[in-house]
Figure 1 (cartoon, rainbow, N blue to C red):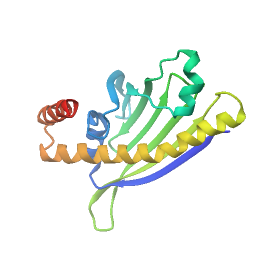
Figure 2: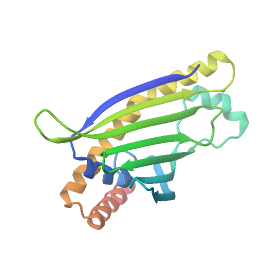
Figure 3: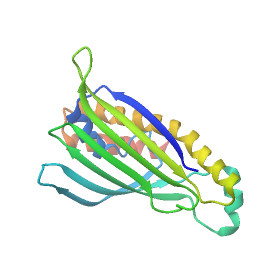
Length: 199
């Protein structure tokens, strides 16, 4: 049976900063598990919306009990590939995104759908409202094992989204510090990432 996790969050930054940070969010100190990001496709449609497809490779993590059960299968589950698609509509200050794993889908299929909408808060400051829904579906083993796997993913998602929100905030703050200059921002982030690897 499919399990779901829902989250609502408000980013205290304007939409332009948020949409730029969305593509520049790796690396950051809250996403050290992200190993690489490659853009597979990008185009602007007739409505002026930017469509992007990216492949994100992350370090994978499974519970100990699952690793024990999979030990005989010789599967290398230390890394996982995520297909991320997004549509950015600058006129309506809207981002629609979907991220899903494309490997180990029998163990667990995770699909994260998110909407990010530019808005104005009660005090007049510009904000971005995030609405995220994540589904978990396992075909691993017998019914109770599938449910245990889905519940594990559901429980971990709160922690993962919290880290992701902090990472976005971190990147947006750094962009603001660099005055939105992408080259200066990328240099600063690369230096920070190198420092993190040394520690």
